Structures are given as C-alpha cells and as structure tokens.
Length: 312
Length: 294
Image 1 (cartoon, each protein chain N blue to C red):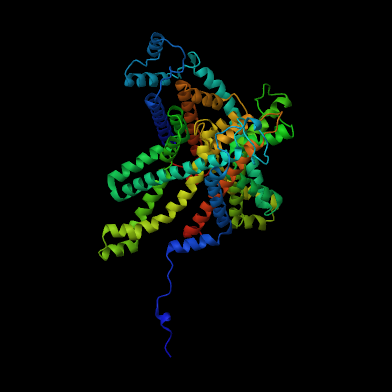
Image 2 (cartoon, one colour):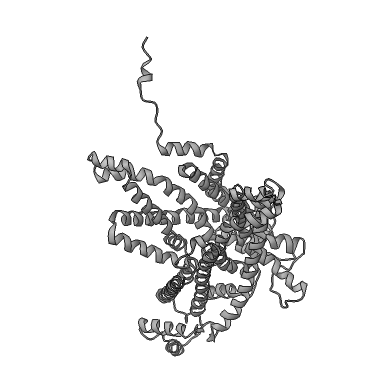
C-alpha cells in the first residue's frame, strides 16, 4: 500500500512538473507579449517591466526562475492587475470553487444513488422513467446550456431564485437559496449517470445466490435491498466518483461563469481573455494538482472499499 | 430431375461489415437519428445559402426581435438574423467536429499501427508516452493553448484533434496485436501471402469496425469540447460563430426585464438534437459491430 501510494505521488509530482513546463513554453512561444496590452507604455518603461519580470533573460533562465518560484509556493505577479500577487486571486477563488464542487459532489452522490436504488426496486415505475430520461437529457444538454435554461425558467420565468450570485451569509435561507441553481447545473449529468450505474449495479446483484439466501432466511425486501444488495450493487457507482470529481472541476468553470460566482473558474476565464500569463498558469497548476490529488485519493479509496482491487 | 443450376452456386455469404450494417439498419432509434443528422447537416449547409439574410448583416429595426415572419428565429442584440447565424454556426460546429476527428483518427491509427508492427522496445516507449499523456489534465492544456494561440477555426480543430487520439491509438494497437496471433492470419502467412496483402485483406477490414465506432463517438465529444471552449470565449471568435458562441451570447443577453429566451433556445436545441443523434448513432454502430458484447 505504501509503495503504491509513494509511486502514485511521485507520478503525480512528475505530471505537475510536465504541466508547468508545457504551460511555460506555450506561453513564451505564443505570439504577442504580456506587456503589449499596456497602452501608452514608453520603450523605456517597457524595458523596465521586462527586466522586472526577467523577460530580458535567456529562456532557460526564465524557466528555471519560474520553477523555483513555484517550488517555493509563489505563483507570481499578475501583470494586467498591476503586479498584484496571483495568490490573492487564486486562493479565495479556490475556496469558493471547492465549496461549490463539494456541494455538487454530495448532491450527485446522494440523489444519484437514491434514484438508482428506487429505480431498481421499482422497475418501470415513474422514478425509473425520471432517471432514464434524465440520463438521456444529460447526454445532450451540456451544463453550459442547462445553466441558462434553468435561469430562464426558474429565475426569470417563475422568479423563485436569483439568476446570479454567491451567498454572502451561510445562515440565511434567502442567501443559501443562491446555491441551488448552480449546484443543480453542476451535478445534473452526474445525478443521471450515477442513477443509471446504481440501477444497473443493483439489478446485477439482485439475482445472485446470496440474495436468494437472504430472502429464504425470511428477511424483508427492505433489508435485502439496503443491507445485502446495496453493498455490492453500489460499487460501479462508486468507481464513477473519481472521474466525476474531475469532471466537476472543469464543470465548475462553466457554472461559475453562468452564475457569476467569484470562484477560481471566473478568475481563470477572465485571465485567459486578458492573456494574464501568470494568473492562467497559477490557476492551471492549482486545477491540475487538484485533479491529480483526487485521482490518487480515489484509487486508494477503491482499495479500502473493494479488497479485490487492492494493489500491493 | 436435375436441380436448377442456381442451387449449385454458393449461397450468398455476408461479410462481417455487411452483417453489422444489417444489424444497424434494424435499430430504429439509430436509423431515425441518422436521418435527423443528415437533415441537420443539410440545414446548416443550405439555410445560409437560401436565406435572404446574411450572418453578419445588421437590421437596426429588429434588434433583439422575437421570432417573427421576417426573422423566423428572431434577431440577436446586433440585429442579426438568428436563424442564419444558428445554422451558419452549426456548420462550423460540425466542421470542427468532423475535421478534429479526422485529425485524431489519422494520428491515432498511424501511431497505434506503427507501435504494434514495430513491437519490442519502440512499442514499449511509444506506449509509455501514451500513458504519460493520459495522465495530463488534457482540458487545461487545451485551454492554455487556446489562451495564447487565439482561436481561428483551424487552430480549434487542430488542437482538439491533436488532444484526442490517445484512446484510438490504444484500440488500434490492441486490435493489430491480437489479429497478428489469429489463426486466419497465420493461415494466410502459411499460404505465402505477403505482408501488404495481409494488411489489406485481413488487418484493415477487421480494424475498421472498432475504428468506425470509436470515430462516431469522438465527433460528439469534440463538438461538445468546441462548444465548451467557445462558450468560455476561448474557441471560435467573432465574426465567425458556432453553437457554443451563440449560447454564450444568448446567456449574456438574458435579463429580468425582457424575455430573450429564444437566443439560447434555438442554438441550444440544435446542439442538443445533434449531440443526441450522434450519440445514438454511435451507440447503434457499437451494438451492431461489437458482436462479443451481445
């Protein structure tokens, strides 16, 4: 287990290194300079700026300097934001995004598996139909379309929710309500997909011998379903939890844009449009570390949940 | 009495591809979706040609006008006809999807077959490279590239294509490796068939199925990525347009005072129908070709 963990961590660090290297060289070989957006910059001022940010040094030196800063945990300065530290944007945004992501993750897991269990227990009932049409809808209505549609119907049409915003307080319902549409948009596809996986998994085990034994012992249907079948039937759904977390990371960029949430994704998109090199690189590194970390955690958890896949 | 001469002829034999196509045609949903796709494709080609409006020209009498007799899908915030823009954008979305997929097929098939035929150390190195690339968070690298190399149509499909060949190369390599060991290939070799003929007559027809199936499922995934990038403002850019750009523009225009829902609804519906049909056709082809799974 330890060997496995160490190997995965080393591979993760190497991947991060590759991402940092790639982003650095893409940003330096791309046409245009990060200082070209500053209007009315005299040649001298521009040269000073270039010296300040080491743009006058050879590329290799620039690269090593950037890597050294990243190793020290410094994400650099955002040039379009007058040299403010990139961390000032990245970390508060990250805190917001993580909350949104965790909420969507929990919602998808709870709603998806519940719907799947009900659908498998009552095949061809209305929850079954809801689950299967939601799964179909999930394939063809991506989150950047679902978000605006939900806004049209529930915010502007029915007036139940605010179209945009992020709660300023975590105790008042009026503020917390702002979370509903973003979380729904972010988790919808995954609710649908998880419910399908759970349903298939449950139907797979429900005909196994040990379930028949449980019934023969005289156990009620509830106990058979929730105690005996669920343990094995839910495994396919749980294996989706890892990829889902990675999808939520990219999905949150879209959802934050649609609902104007001040998360990392919003900063990232703004930075990308402004060609804010350091902020884009910082955000990508944070996003990449997050998805690499999630993959490792998930792989370890599989081993805990299902001893058959435990890697030595 | 002699039997009629026909009875002596060999019965018509069906090739695996013909059998698969027959199975596909019996799949009602996939067949309907294929027809719908052709209709959508035709609409994206014909509407901009036949419509009296141009995708760029503005009509200041109809800014943000709802669907009406003159502009069937309404007009956008610049007074441009949404119907022509939707289908013109669809043309670009389709083109990106198809061209990027072609790029990924070209790279993936070449890479996978070289790796499989070379074998040994080169194979090992090439597959390690694929493993490493798999570990990269692809979407973020794509976003980085699109940030610094601003999105013309060519850049978008090249980048998306060059980032989606990994799985295909693995599929092709695996297929070739297993085909190499099969009895009929061995028999062909024993009969003295040259490698060129073996590749042409035995390898390519057998790889074709999985490649076609994977390709049809790549198109919707690439189109989705293109709309995702365009929605974020990192893909296709003005004055060109695509479904992702139109949904983005529509979503930005939404406000509580004036109902502008058609700006999102029409491009959104086109995108949704297309994605649904492409996925159904892909699933249908997979069911038809993949006999082991049945």
